[in-house]
Image 1: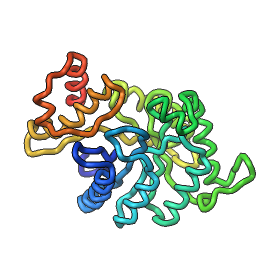
Image 2: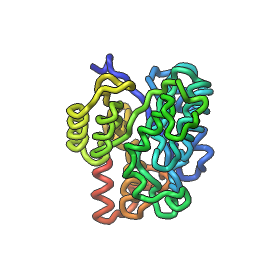
Image 3: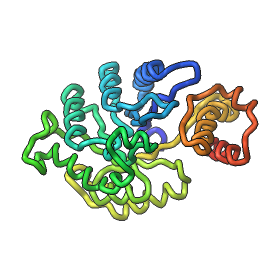
Length: 279
């Protein structure tokens, strides 16, 4: 099964203590070259705003840099948070990417809005904007199909076919099924919830011009090393960042494992930390 499975990489351009955002972004481009050399199917980059530990804030811009630095690997977004943007602008950006790098671009789309009130205000959005994700998704795909709601045209997107993927859990999985789009689902909230979401998606899927049958991409945190102990140690910085964000509301830069292992944690921090390591 492993031999026939396509493996991909999602990189959020995490900032490490002592290194800034520019270094993290350059590291992402270098990682893309390496995973292409290793034979991975695709690499995706994320969208986060105002997060101290994440440099990936403009995924279509970063995707362009990666596609220019590689030759064959598929490049996409995991994802563009559609409620943060006007669908026309998103269509135009992906139209440009597909025109420059034909046949290599994936359009991963999420339904989250800014993580904090300050970010949402700066974006001109609020939490309720995520409620119309299905409508935003339909409008975006319409720009590619030439069914504009205003009579305008998205150039150069109109007529191009950029594969769309919906990043979702729960309600978002139902939206992907209704729209007939591939689903990308992670197990951040528990393995059982992930499996239930996939079952609901497959049961409710309706074929569309974009996908004839259900298609699922599963996202997870994977560490590879010579021994289980070394692999677990690779997860320590990220696990601590998850625990930190769960108690303080923001992702910090990643710190070395040995520093984290010396820290005293509260009961809540320890619980979140151990849960992240198990994930």
